[in-house]
Length: 266
Image (spheres, rainbow, N blue to C red):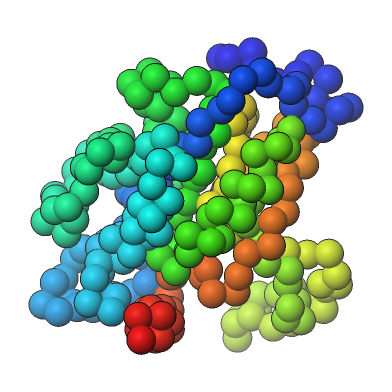
């Protein structure tokens, strides 16, 4: 494992400074099945993961990639991590693999495993350095805009830790108690100071890889990159995103995303 973290991480909550310019890579885990989406056949296509389903006439994953493509040479490269058994990608996205784009058939059983495999490939195959940055983004957040990506990069390039797009919680927050008749309210929680995590999330490649490796070794479940970093005592920067940067998760999300995309096109 890389000796990348400061030994005083718990005390400093900051990384050591780095010398020289660092490049910015993009890593998009795209190996999930989207079970919660509950999708029927769409346009005659059944059985494909949600990231390949069409929204406003274009597969979701293409909308996602196009937002990053628009940044051009500001990014050092873009990697998509798909399942080794994926037989749909080339059919869905025939225009992928332009200059700087790479397809990695190394998706794992979990999102964290897919990201970890992708980071290892960045370091060993593409020649990325441990102190280069990586933007990890959900394939299912197809409403991300170039302006939001640029805002995150601008906020984090000079930061010692890195950070993530997030949105302050606006709704009243409830905890649940489960009974024989389903879920009921257990308590109303204070929403002050609480944020909804989004992606991209931007960290140094080596630091993030070590954080994910340590989470795996300890058996700790991490649901995003920030939580892996937090487990080692670091405090990522919160960069305000947009409520429109939603993750397509449930069936009704498709109609909402399509309405947003069509309004942008119009």
